[in-house]
Image 1 (cartoon, rainbow, N blue to C red):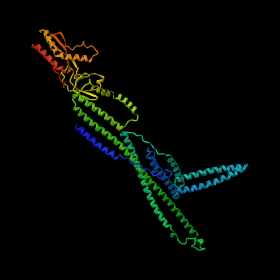
Image 2 (cartoon, rainbow, N blue to C red):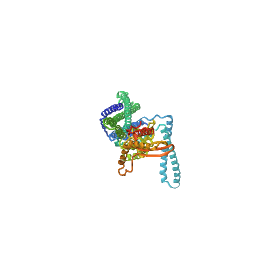
Image 3 (spheres, one colour):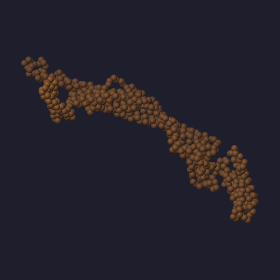
Image 4 (cartoon, rainbow, N blue to C red):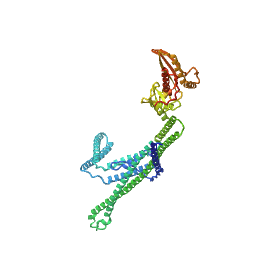
Length: 619
C-alpha cells in the first residue's frame, strides 16, 4: 500500500472512531417530560399599560411547526400566558379606578367645560321630553307653537351633545378620563382574548427525510426553536423576579399600614361612650371624620391585599411558564440529539465506504500483482476495478448525503435526459473507453494511428487517450516529443489503427533504380528471390488470418505474395517490389532489403536476407 493510501486510511479510521463515539453519546434520546395540567381558562390581550410579551411569545411558538410531542407544552404555554394577561389586565383596571390620574390645569378646564355641557344637555333633554309630551296633546295654534319650540330645543340638544362629545375627547387626550381608558383596555382585552381562543397549535408530523443535508436542516430548525424557548424562559424568570420584588415591597408597606391602623392607635375620646349627652353635638363631626378615614384606610388596605394576591398568582404563572419552557427545551434537545445521532450514522456509513474502498483497492492491487497476466492486461484490469470502485463509492456517498429523492423515477428520467444532452461528448467518450478496453481495443504501449496521428499510447483514461507522437508509418518512427490527446469518442464515431496486436499487416515497397549500362534481369530476379524468401512466412500467416477473418467469403483470390513492377525511367530502369510485412517489423525488414539491394548492385554474390524478429514499438 502506498504512503498516501496509508495516511488516508489512518485519517479515515480516526474519523470513524470519533463518529462511533458520537453515536455512543447520542444513542439514547431524551425522554419527553409530561407537562402539568391545570384547569383554567382566561383571556389575553395587549394594551399600552400591560406587558404583552409573554402572550406574544407563546403565540409565536404555537404558530411554529410543532411535533405532537411538543403540543402539550405549547398549549400549556398559551394557557399560562393567557391567565397571566387576565390578572395583569384586572390589576391595571383596579389601579386605574383606585388611582385616577392627577388632572393638570388644562384637564381641569376641560372637565369644567364638560360639566357645564353635560348640565346644559340634561336641561335640553328634560325640555325636549316635556315639549314632546305637550305637543302630543296640543291642537291648533298651540300645537304649531309647540312644534317650533320642539325644533329649537332639539337643535340645542344636538349642539350640546356635540359639545359633550368634544369635551370628552379632549379630556381623554389630556389623560383626565380614567373611565374611557378602562373601557378601551376592556375592549382591547376582549378582542385579544377572542384572537387567542381562535389560535390553534400548529401540530405537524415531520416527514421522514434521509440524508445529511436534511438532517442539518432539521437540526438548524430545532436549534432556532430552542433559542426562542431559552429567551422565553429567561423572560419568564426575569418577570417572576420583578413581580416578587414588587410583592415584597407592597407586603412590607401593607404590614406597616396595618400596624399604624391598630385599635391602640385610635385617639381616645372618639368612641360612642366617651362623651356626655351635652357634648354629643359638639363631637359628632370629629367622630364622623375619623370613621371616614378609618373606612377609607381599610378599603385601601383591602385593595392592596387584593393586589398582593394578584401578584402571587402572576408570580406563580411565570414560574410555571418557566418550568414549562424548561421541559419543552429538554424535549427539543432530545430531538436534536436524535437528529445528530442519525447524522453521525450517515457519517459512519460514508467513512466505512471510504475505508472499504481503500481496503479493496489495495487488496485488488496485490491480487493482480500475483497473477501471471501480461503487464498491459494487469494495468487494464487495475484501471477498470479502480474506476468501478470510485463510481460506486461516489454514488453511495451522494445517496447518504442527499438521500433518496421522493420521486426517484421522475428525477432519474429528467436528470438522465438533461445530462445526456449536456454531457454528450463526455458520455460518448466514456462509452468509447469501454470499447477501447475490449478485445479489439488498445493498451498502454501500443503503437497506433488515430485520426492521422501515429504514436505510442502513454495514457488511457476514462475520457481521453494520450499518444506520444512518432509520425506516420513511412517515417523513421522516432518520437517527435509531442503528446497528443484525443477524446475517446473516436472509438465510436471514428476509426483507429493498432499496429501492435496480431493481424496488423502492412504492404511495404522496395524501390531500386538500375543504371542503363547494367543488365536489369539478373538483379530483378535476385531481388525478387530475396524478397520472396524474406516474406514467405509473413505472407503465409497473413493469408491464413485473412481467411479466418472472413470465413463466409472466398478469400482464395487474395494473395500475400510479393509483386514486382519494372518500368523504364530516365537514366535506367526502376524496380518496385511490394511485399507484406508485420507493422512492428517493417523498419528492420526494409533496412535489410535495402542493404541486400546495395550489395547486389555492388557486385557482391550470395546476398542473403533473414526474416527479422519483431521489434518492440518505437519509444
